[in-house]
Image 1 (tube, rainbow, N blue to C red):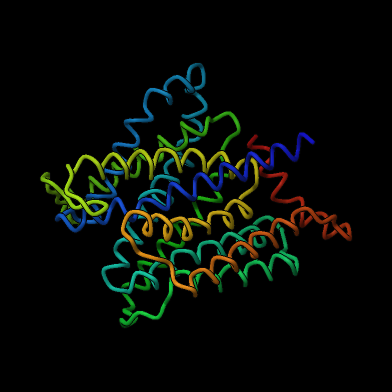
Image 2 (spheres, rainbow, N blue to C red):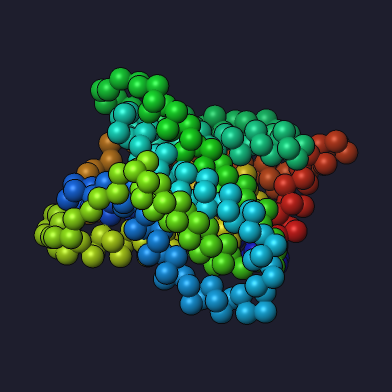
Length: 325
């Protein structure tokens, strides 16, 4: 019973993370249309989020600063790849590719998680997981609706694959981080690293960093630029990163990553509610396939192992995640 409650709480955290992550595009669109560069929007997002998490991070690390010091390497990789890399990769991919193609390339990170858990930890995916993977990816194709025009630029493909590596890093490191390092500290420290890297690259001219500070169009009305900034940093960064790390610790990297696919569905819903962009029938079909894929992965997680080798394959990731709790 306790395990079921723990799993339910983990799924709730994963859905909360996906739902709040799904608002980032709506908030960021108003900034970019007002003249912000994508890199500036990302830097503001993670930088302000890190500041908002500073006080709870300090409180959570009382008597545990040595834990942060011994995890500086992991935090550095998390901030560089999972925070800065994933977001900058996706926004730059959008410069060269249709947004649907860029998003599909980023979410190939979900498949990279399964491959990584198999190659590095011996967690061989069983047939239901393979079927769930196929259903989820097919559903993702339908949800993002690749019927729009636009060529496939190889530079954009490389940026999109870079975003995929960042997304996979996010799920894997979230599940592997030291159990004594609080989730809020992991998220905040990673954001500090991510923001610092973006600002440094901007300072040397490697990335464009420019912003405007007038009124912006948001949800069909004119409002202050502070509204989307607060939204993209608090609602779309602080909440989802902390909730997502907590979910990965409870559920493990693979299941948390598949639940994270629902971010696309939530993004469609948010755009519908705030931008009047109604989902199409094919997007609804894709949503059903994603839910079915997540369900198949969850069922596979609960099935008993049929052999000693299979049991070892199945317990690799839960044991890893358990060390983090």
